[in-house]
Length: 340
Ligand SMILES: Nc1nc2c(c(=O)[nH]1)N[C@H]1C(S)=C(S)[C@@H](COP(=O)(O)OP(=O)(O)OC[C@H]3O[C@@H](n4cnc5c(N)ncnc54)[C@H](O)[C@@H]3O)O[C@H]1N2
Ligand code: MOO
Image 1 (spheres, rainbow, N blue to C red):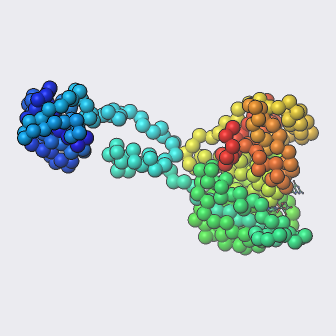
Image 2 (cartoon, rainbow, N blue to C red):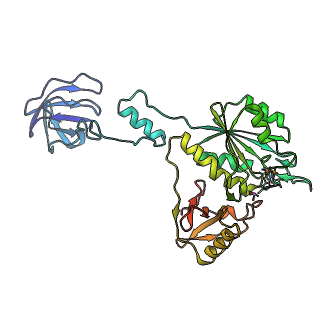
């Protein structure tokens, strides 16, 4: 507060002035005051600060009412030494940096946000206009920047390469990213060059497929200090693979704990459908079904074929059932705008 630092009860005699940045002024005795600017250190012995607008001054004499301690910020008022202000693993935003500076820190140990690029394969996959009958519009690439950002990564680049394995090699050889997502080319067909290309480059395969539907032809590779995640070409299968492999990878690289699966209440009709779907798979696969929460229960969004996204635009997560899952669990989508 701009005003007077006073000592003891009124009246006071003004004996000097102290401004922000000044060295600490001489101690005040009871009945003395100094003019003070906001940000200046009150002199030892000051018991309150009286704002100008609440003071009456005549020559060096000052009157007013000052409650003990008013308008004086105490050292340690915000945090005491040794108190944890931000837990390890927190994602830092601009306010954390302000707080760190306020704490007097010059450096903080951080993990950088993993950088991610995507390689879109498929001679039939086009990025513009209405596709011809032998073509399909890329429905995976446009999802990836937002999904990566909401899962804690920094999306950098998207490269369509048709079916040219050489371009995948070139992208990987010049890699600058922590994670490269490759869509398509992951199954067993003649154009499915992902595994042969990565193997010939000397990458180490960590996961060769995942027992889930949709999205089983997904893979994880380690190459030097980068990871490659193979996402199947079918759009909903790619989304499932992103949730299954890419999200935990981003969590781990970002120093965050892995997300658990909690059993959740399910709408009766949807539960029956999920159980039928799971039984059809003979318990061999985990079923991931896009769903949303309605009245506290998971409900189907429909239109959930592995080549479709129509239902998933309304989904807030996957209902998960199958081996190792107790009941039916909910895995929320971090990019979902709807609040659960
Ligand atoms: N013999 C087998 N064949 C297939 C199997 C299998 O187990 N044995 N699995 C099937 C499943 S399930 C999937 S999923 C696909 C995955 O194949 P790929 O990852 O190699 O993907 P593609 O063959 O390139 O494409 C599959 C499908 O998706 C279309 N596609 C591709 N990229 C995009 C894109 N960016 N946007 C929209 N659509 C895309 C593509 O035209 C194909 O129709 O393998 C099955 N086969
Ligand atoms: O994984 Mo494919 O997922 O069913 O289209």
